[in-house]
Image (cartoon, rainbow, N blue to C red; front, side, top):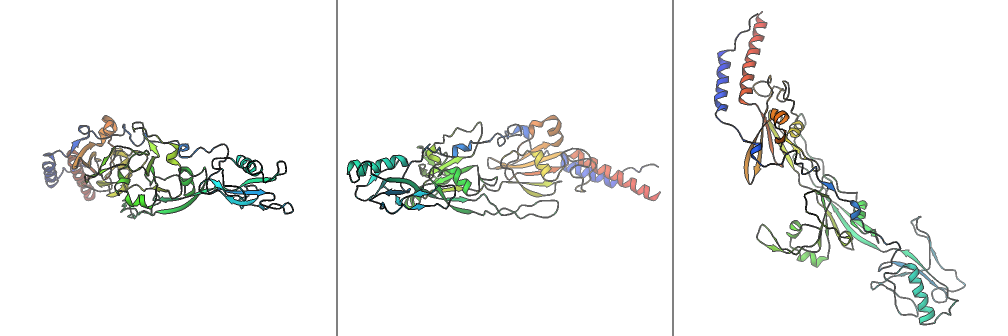
Length: 429
Protein backbone atom coordinates (compact mmCIF):
# COMPACT_ATOMS: atom_id res chain seq x y z
CA UNK A 1 0.00 0.00 0.00
CA UNK A 2 1.57 3.34 -0.98
CA UNK A 3 2.20 5.89 1.71
CA UNK A 4 0.85 9.35 1.04
CA UNK A 5 3.48 12.08 0.97
CA UNK A 6 3.47 14.79 3.61
CA UNK A 7 0.77 17.35 3.11
CA UNK A 8 1.61 20.83 1.89
CA UNK A 9 0.30 22.26 5.16
CA UNK A 10 2.77 20.15 7.16
CA UNK A 11 5.69 21.14 4.96
CA UNK A 12 4.67 24.78 5.21
CA UNK A 13 4.60 24.54 9.01
CA UNK A 14 8.02 22.93 8.96
CA UNK A 15 9.33 25.73 6.76
CA UNK A 16 8.03 28.41 9.10
CA UNK A 17 9.65 26.70 12.07
CA UNK A 18 12.93 26.47 10.19
CA UNK A 19 12.81 30.16 9.30
CA UNK A 20 11.95 31.13 12.87
CA UNK A 21 14.76 29.13 14.49
CA UNK A 22 17.37 28.90 11.79
CA UNK A 23 18.37 32.53 11.90
CA UNK A 24 19.80 32.55 15.42
CA UNK A 25 21.90 30.32 17.66
CA UNK A 26 20.82 30.36 21.26
CA UNK A 27 23.33 30.72 24.03
CA UNK A 28 27.12 30.51 24.49
CA UNK A 29 28.93 27.17 24.22
CA UNK A 30 30.06 25.80 27.57
CA UNK A 31 33.70 25.59 26.51
CA UNK A 32 33.75 29.37 26.01
CA UNK A 33 33.01 29.94 29.70
CA UNK A 34 35.21 29.14 32.66
CA UNK A 35 32.50 27.35 34.62
CA UNK A 36 33.18 24.43 37.01
CA UNK A 37 32.59 21.01 35.47
CA UNK A 38 32.13 17.52 36.85
CA UNK A 39 35.89 17.00 36.61
CA UNK A 40 36.54 19.92 38.96
CA UNK A 41 34.24 18.50 41.68
CA UNK A 42 34.66 21.26 44.32
CA UNK A 43 32.11 19.73 46.69
CA UNK A 44 33.17 16.12 46.27
CA UNK A 45 36.72 17.04 47.23
CA UNK A 46 35.62 18.29 50.64
CA UNK A 47 36.46 15.98 53.50
CA UNK A 48 35.30 16.20 57.12
CA UNK A 49 37.84 17.29 59.66
CA UNK A 50 39.06 14.94 62.34
CA UNK A 51 36.31 15.27 64.94
CA UNK A 52 38.78 14.42 67.71
CA UNK A 53 39.93 18.01 67.26
CA UNK A 54 36.56 19.16 68.59
CA UNK A 55 37.22 17.41 71.92
CA UNK A 56 39.66 18.56 74.56
CA UNK A 57 42.25 16.23 76.01
CA UNK A 58 41.38 15.53 79.67
CA UNK A 59 44.26 15.30 82.14
CA UNK A 60 45.22 11.83 83.42
CA UNK A 61 44.00 12.82 86.91
CA UNK A 62 41.12 15.14 87.73
CA UNK A 63 42.31 18.62 88.77
CA UNK A 64 40.22 20.66 91.17
CA UNK A 65 38.85 24.09 90.36
CA UNK A 66 36.17 26.63 91.35
CA UNK A 67 32.73 25.03 91.39
CA UNK A 68 33.85 21.61 92.61
CA UNK A 69 32.31 20.28 95.81
CA UNK A 70 34.53 18.26 98.11
CA UNK A 71 33.50 15.88 100.85
CA UNK A 72 35.76 16.67 103.83
CA UNK A 73 35.85 14.92 107.21
CA UNK A 74 38.27 16.12 109.90
CA UNK A 75 37.90 14.32 113.20
CA UNK A 76 37.42 16.70 116.16
CA UNK A 77 37.00 19.64 113.74
CA UNK A 78 34.38 18.54 111.19
CA UNK A 79 32.91 15.56 113.00
CA UNK A 80 33.23 13.82 116.38
CA UNK A 81 34.98 10.52 117.07
CA UNK A 82 31.78 8.94 118.38
CA UNK A 83 29.78 9.89 115.26
CA UNK A 84 30.59 8.10 111.99
CA UNK A 85 31.34 10.38 109.03
CA UNK A 86 28.42 11.08 106.68
CA UNK A 87 28.26 9.02 103.52
CA UNK A 88 26.72 10.39 100.35
CA UNK A 89 25.43 8.07 97.63
CA UNK A 90 25.28 9.84 94.24
CA UNK A 91 22.32 9.35 91.94
CA UNK A 92 24.64 8.09 89.22
CA UNK A 93 25.28 4.40 89.96
CA UNK A 94 28.65 4.55 88.20
CA UNK A 95 29.98 7.09 90.73
CA UNK A 96 31.22 5.56 94.01
CA UNK A 97 29.96 6.84 97.38
CA UNK A 98 31.74 9.80 98.94
CA UNK A 99 32.49 10.50 102.59
CA UNK A 100 32.53 13.83 104.37
CA UNK A 101 30.73 17.12 104.71
CA UNK A 102 30.11 19.07 101.48
CA UNK A 103 32.62 21.88 101.07
CA UNK A 104 32.61 23.92 97.84
CA UNK A 105 35.69 25.29 96.15
CA UNK A 106 35.24 29.05 96.03
CA UNK A 107 35.73 31.37 93.05
CA UNK A 108 39.30 32.16 94.09
CA UNK A 109 40.20 28.46 94.11
CA UNK A 110 40.30 28.07 97.89
CA UNK A 111 38.32 26.10 100.47
CA UNK A 112 37.26 27.62 103.77
CA UNK A 113 37.72 25.32 106.79
CA UNK A 114 37.41 25.98 110.55
CA UNK A 115 40.40 27.22 112.55
CA UNK A 116 42.72 27.65 109.54
CA UNK A 117 43.02 30.32 106.86
CA UNK A 118 41.64 29.57 103.36
CA UNK A 119 43.61 26.87 101.59
CA UNK A 120 44.23 27.20 97.85
CA UNK A 121 43.68 23.90 96.10
CA UNK A 122 42.94 24.98 92.52
CA UNK A 123 44.88 22.88 90.03
CA UNK A 124 45.59 20.10 92.56
CA UNK A 125 44.40 16.52 92.62
CA UNK A 126 42.19 15.22 95.44
CA UNK A 127 45.18 13.45 97.04
CA UNK A 128 47.27 16.61 96.90
CA UNK A 129 44.41 18.64 98.41
CA UNK A 130 44.09 16.13 101.28
CA UNK A 131 47.82 16.34 101.96
CA UNK A 132 47.69 20.16 101.97
CA UNK A 133 44.73 20.18 104.40
CA UNK A 134 46.50 17.72 106.69
CA UNK A 135 49.60 19.93 106.77
CA UNK A 136 47.43 22.95 107.60
CA UNK A 137 46.06 21.21 110.73
CA UNK A 138 49.13 19.30 111.86
CA UNK A 139 52.15 21.35 110.76
CA UNK A 140 51.14 24.95 110.15
CA UNK A 141 48.76 25.43 113.11
CA UNK A 142 49.37 22.15 115.02
CA UNK A 143 45.71 21.88 115.88
CA UNK A 144 45.77 18.09 115.60
CA UNK A 145 48.64 16.01 116.96
CA UNK A 146 50.63 14.23 114.25
CA UNK A 147 49.76 10.56 113.91
CA UNK A 148 46.31 11.03 115.44
CA UNK A 149 44.78 13.11 112.67
CA UNK A 150 41.96 11.47 110.80
CA UNK A 151 41.26 13.51 107.67
CA UNK A 152 39.28 12.29 104.65
CA UNK A 153 38.89 14.26 101.40
CA UNK A 154 36.78 13.02 98.48
CA UNK A 155 35.30 14.58 95.36
CA UNK A 156 31.56 14.89 95.95
CA UNK A 157 30.48 16.72 92.76
CA UNK A 158 32.42 17.89 89.76
CA UNK A 159 32.04 21.42 88.49
CA UNK A 160 29.86 21.95 85.43
CA UNK A 161 29.47 24.57 82.72
CA UNK A 162 26.14 25.86 81.38
CA UNK A 163 26.14 26.29 77.61
CA UNK A 164 23.39 27.12 75.13
CA UNK A 165 23.26 25.23 71.83
CA UNK A 166 21.08 26.82 69.13
CA UNK A 167 20.44 24.56 66.15
CA UNK A 168 18.70 25.44 62.90
CA UNK A 169 19.55 22.24 61.05
CA UNK A 170 16.07 20.78 61.63
CA UNK A 171 13.78 21.98 58.87
CA UNK A 172 10.05 21.66 58.41
CA UNK A 173 8.79 19.66 55.47
CA UNK A 174 8.72 21.70 52.24
CA UNK A 175 5.52 22.28 50.31
CA UNK A 176 5.52 20.03 47.27
CA UNK A 177 3.32 19.78 44.24
CA UNK A 178 1.72 16.41 43.58
CA UNK A 179 2.13 14.69 40.25
CA UNK A 180 5.14 14.08 38.06
CA UNK A 181 6.68 17.48 38.59
CA UNK A 182 8.09 18.59 41.91
CA UNK A 183 7.67 22.05 43.32
CA UNK A 184 9.53 23.05 46.47
CA UNK A 185 8.17 26.42 47.48
CA UNK A 186 10.65 26.75 50.31
CA UNK A 187 11.56 25.29 53.63
CA UNK A 188 10.99 26.75 57.04
CA UNK A 189 13.65 26.85 59.72
CA UNK A 190 12.69 25.29 63.00
CA UNK A 191 15.30 26.40 65.49
CA UNK A 192 15.78 24.42 68.67
CA UNK A 193 17.68 25.57 71.74
CA UNK A 194 19.29 23.24 74.26
CA UNK A 195 20.48 24.27 77.70
CA UNK A 196 23.39 21.88 78.12
CA UNK A 197 25.26 21.27 81.36
CA UNK A 198 28.72 19.89 80.66
CA UNK A 199 31.00 18.43 83.33
CA UNK A 200 34.56 19.62 83.65
CA UNK A 201 36.92 18.34 80.92
CA UNK A 202 33.88 17.53 78.80
CA UNK A 203 33.01 21.18 78.19
CA UNK A 204 33.93 21.21 74.51
CA UNK A 205 32.20 21.48 71.16
CA UNK A 206 32.02 17.74 70.50
CA UNK A 207 30.26 16.98 73.81
CA UNK A 208 27.91 19.95 73.34
CA UNK A 209 26.88 18.60 69.93
CA UNK A 210 26.49 15.10 71.33
CA UNK A 211 24.16 16.39 74.05
CA UNK A 212 22.04 18.36 71.57
CA UNK A 213 21.40 15.82 68.83
CA UNK A 214 24.74 14.96 67.28
CA UNK A 215 26.78 16.43 64.47
CA UNK A 216 25.13 18.93 62.09
CA UNK A 217 23.08 17.36 59.30
CA UNK A 218 22.97 18.07 55.59
CA UNK A 219 20.61 21.02 56.15
CA UNK A 220 23.23 22.90 58.16
CA UNK A 221 26.24 24.89 57.09
CA UNK A 222 29.62 23.19 57.27
CA UNK A 223 30.71 25.15 60.32
CA UNK A 224 30.06 25.69 64.01
CA UNK A 225 29.94 29.23 65.37
CA UNK A 226 30.79 29.93 69.03
CA UNK A 227 29.69 33.24 70.58
CA UNK A 228 31.48 34.14 73.76
CA UNK A 229 31.28 37.02 76.19
CA UNK A 230 28.55 38.69 78.20
CA UNK A 231 25.74 41.15 77.64
CA UNK A 232 28.05 44.15 77.28
CA UNK A 233 30.12 42.39 74.64
CA UNK A 234 27.00 41.50 72.67
CA UNK A 235 25.71 45.06 72.93
CA UNK A 236 28.93 46.52 71.58
CA UNK A 237 29.32 43.88 68.86
CA UNK A 238 28.69 45.16 65.36
CA UNK A 239 25.85 43.20 63.72
CA UNK A 240 27.98 42.65 60.60
CA UNK A 241 30.83 41.04 62.47
CA UNK A 242 29.23 37.60 62.74
CA UNK A 243 28.73 37.38 58.99
CA UNK A 244 32.11 38.71 57.89
CA UNK A 245 34.40 37.10 60.43
CA UNK A 246 36.26 34.16 58.87
CA UNK A 247 38.42 31.53 60.55
CA UNK A 248 38.49 30.22 64.09
CA UNK A 249 41.28 32.56 65.19
CA UNK A 250 40.68 36.26 65.76
CA UNK A 251 42.47 38.11 62.99
CA UNK A 252 44.15 41.46 63.05
CA UNK A 253 43.39 42.64 59.53
CA UNK A 254 40.33 44.91 59.23
CA UNK A 255 37.27 43.87 57.24
CA UNK A 256 35.38 46.20 54.93
CA UNK A 257 31.64 45.64 54.70
CA UNK A 258 29.55 46.35 51.58
CA UNK A 259 28.42 49.56 53.27
CA UNK A 260 32.02 50.77 53.52
CA UNK A 261 32.47 50.16 57.26
CA UNK A 262 35.89 49.06 58.49
CA UNK A 263 35.49 46.35 61.11
CA UNK A 264 37.99 44.58 63.31
CA UNK A 265 37.30 40.85 63.84
CA UNK A 266 35.83 40.21 67.26
CA UNK A 267 37.85 37.73 69.35
CA UNK A 268 34.61 36.57 70.99
CA UNK A 269 33.39 34.98 67.75
CA UNK A 270 34.91 31.64 66.77
CA UNK A 271 34.10 29.79 63.54
CA UNK A 272 35.14 26.16 63.26
CA UNK A 273 34.83 24.58 59.80
CA UNK A 274 33.58 20.99 59.66
CA UNK A 275 34.64 20.18 56.09
CA UNK A 276 37.72 21.38 54.25
CA UNK A 277 38.95 20.92 50.70
CA UNK A 278 42.47 20.31 49.36
CA UNK A 279 42.69 23.86 48.02
CA UNK A 280 41.15 25.54 51.05
CA UNK A 281 43.61 27.63 53.09
CA UNK A 282 44.61 25.72 56.22
CA UNK A 283 42.96 26.80 59.44
CA UNK A 284 44.65 26.14 62.75
CA UNK A 285 42.30 24.99 65.51
CA UNK A 286 43.71 25.26 69.00
CA UNK A 287 42.34 23.53 72.06
CA UNK A 288 41.21 26.82 73.59
CA UNK A 289 39.01 27.41 70.54
CA UNK A 290 36.81 24.39 71.24
CA UNK A 291 36.63 24.66 75.05
CA UNK A 292 33.33 26.11 76.30
CA UNK A 293 32.68 28.12 79.44
CA UNK A 294 29.63 29.39 81.26
CA UNK A 295 27.42 31.53 79.05
CA UNK A 296 28.92 30.47 75.72
CA UNK A 297 26.53 29.96 72.82
CA UNK A 298 27.10 27.28 70.18
CA UNK A 299 25.25 28.22 67.00
CA UNK A 300 24.59 25.85 64.09
CA UNK A 301 23.09 27.84 61.24
CA UNK A 302 20.87 26.32 58.60
CA UNK A 303 22.13 26.75 55.07
CA UNK A 304 19.99 28.73 52.71
CA UNK A 305 17.86 26.76 50.27
CA UNK A 306 19.88 26.29 47.07
CA UNK A 307 17.65 25.19 44.23
CA UNK A 308 17.59 24.90 40.46
CA UNK A 309 14.65 24.93 38.05
CA UNK A 310 13.74 22.78 35.07
CA UNK A 311 11.55 23.51 32.09
CA UNK A 312 11.15 23.13 28.36
CA UNK A 313 10.48 19.52 27.40
CA UNK A 314 11.06 18.53 31.05
CA UNK A 315 8.10 19.05 33.31
CA UNK A 316 8.78 22.25 35.21
CA UNK A 317 9.86 21.98 38.81
CA UNK A 318 12.09 23.27 41.58
CA UNK A 319 14.71 20.92 43.03
CA UNK A 320 17.24 21.26 45.86
CA UNK A 321 20.97 21.20 45.13
CA UNK A 322 22.85 18.64 47.28
CA UNK A 323 25.21 20.03 49.87
CA UNK A 324 27.97 17.43 50.03
CA UNK A 325 28.33 16.24 46.45
CA UNK A 326 28.35 17.79 43.01
CA UNK A 327 25.41 17.73 40.63
CA UNK A 328 26.10 18.17 36.92
CA UNK A 329 23.65 19.10 34.21
CA UNK A 330 22.98 15.46 33.25
CA UNK A 331 22.11 14.58 36.82
CA UNK A 332 19.83 17.63 37.01
CA UNK A 333 17.94 16.49 33.90
CA UNK A 334 17.58 13.01 35.35
CA UNK A 335 16.38 14.50 38.65
CA UNK A 336 13.78 16.49 36.73
CA UNK A 337 12.39 13.32 35.17
CA UNK A 338 14.03 13.61 31.74
CA UNK A 339 16.01 10.95 29.90
CA UNK A 340 19.69 11.37 29.11
CA UNK A 341 19.88 8.34 26.83
CA UNK A 342 19.42 10.34 23.60
CA UNK A 343 17.34 7.61 22.03
CA UNK A 344 13.81 7.65 20.63
CA UNK A 345 11.30 7.49 23.42
CA UNK A 346 13.57 9.44 25.78
CA UNK A 347 13.04 12.91 27.19
CA UNK A 348 10.12 14.64 25.56
CA UNK A 349 8.39 11.35 24.77
CA UNK A 350 5.34 12.30 26.82
CA UNK A 351 3.69 14.07 23.91
CA UNK A 352 5.18 17.46 24.78
CA UNK A 353 6.16 19.51 21.74
CA UNK A 354 5.73 18.95 18.01
CA UNK A 355 6.64 15.28 18.10
CA UNK A 356 8.65 12.65 19.89
CA UNK A 357 10.11 10.42 17.23
CA UNK A 358 13.49 12.11 17.53
CA UNK A 359 14.57 12.93 21.11
CA UNK A 360 15.65 16.50 21.99
CA UNK A 361 19.37 17.12 22.45
CA UNK A 362 19.61 20.89 23.00
CA UNK A 363 20.23 21.94 26.62
CA UNK A 364 20.03 25.58 27.65
CA UNK A 365 21.28 26.63 31.08
CA UNK A 366 20.20 30.13 32.11
CA UNK A 367 22.69 31.36 34.72
CA UNK A 368 23.60 34.68 36.31
CA UNK A 369 27.32 35.33 35.74
CA UNK A 370 28.91 38.55 37.05
CA UNK A 371 25.49 40.08 37.58
CA UNK A 372 24.27 39.37 34.05
CA UNK A 373 21.94 36.64 32.88
CA UNK A 374 23.74 34.33 30.47
CA UNK A 375 22.46 31.38 28.46
CA UNK A 376 24.87 28.45 28.16
CA UNK A 377 24.31 26.12 25.22
CA UNK A 378 25.01 22.39 25.51
CA UNK A 379 24.36 19.37 23.35
CA UNK A 380 23.17 16.21 25.05
CA UNK A 381 24.87 13.88 22.59
CA UNK A 382 28.16 15.74 22.88
CA UNK A 383 28.05 15.51 26.67
CA UNK A 384 27.72 11.74 26.44
CA UNK A 385 30.10 10.97 23.59
CA UNK A 386 32.32 13.78 22.30
CA UNK A 387 32.77 16.43 25.00
CA UNK A 388 32.13 14.99 28.47
CA UNK A 389 34.32 17.75 29.87
CA UNK A 390 31.47 20.21 29.15
CA UNK A 391 29.27 18.67 31.86
CA UNK A 392 29.05 21.84 33.90
CA UNK A 393 27.99 21.75 37.54
CA UNK A 394 24.59 23.08 38.54
CA UNK A 395 24.71 26.37 40.41
CA UNK A 396 22.00 27.91 42.63
CA UNK A 397 19.06 29.40 40.73
CA UNK A 398 20.04 27.81 37.42
CA UNK A 399 17.21 27.26 34.94
CA UNK A 400 17.78 24.12 32.85
CA UNK A 401 15.73 23.79 29.67
CA UNK A 402 15.63 20.81 27.32
CA UNK A 403 14.66 21.74 23.76
CA UNK A 404 14.71 20.47 20.19
CA UNK A 405 17.31 21.61 17.73
CA UNK A 406 16.06 23.06 14.46
CA UNK A 407 16.76 19.82 12.62
CA UNK A 408 15.06 17.71 15.30
CA UNK A 409 11.97 19.88 15.28
CA UNK A 410 11.76 19.84 11.49
CA UNK A 411 12.21 16.08 11.27
CA UNK A 412 9.64 15.49 14.00
CA UNK A 413 7.13 17.61 12.08
CA UNK A 414 7.78 15.74 8.85
CA UNK A 415 7.76 12.33 10.48
CA UNK A 416 4.60 13.18 12.38
CA UNK A 417 2.90 14.11 9.11
CA UNK A 418 4.09 10.89 7.49
CA UNK A 419 2.85 8.88 10.46
CA UNK A 420 -0.51 10.68 10.43
CA UNK A 421 -1.00 10.12 6.68
CA UNK A 422 -0.06 6.49 7.08
CA UNK A 423 -2.69 6.18 9.80
CA UNK A 424 -5.34 7.78 7.53
CA UNK A 425 -4.51 5.45 4.65
CA UNK A 426 -4.69 2.46 6.94
CA UNK A 427 -8.04 3.67 8.26
CA UNK A 428 -9.44 4.12 4.73
CA UNK A 429 -8.27 0.66 3.69
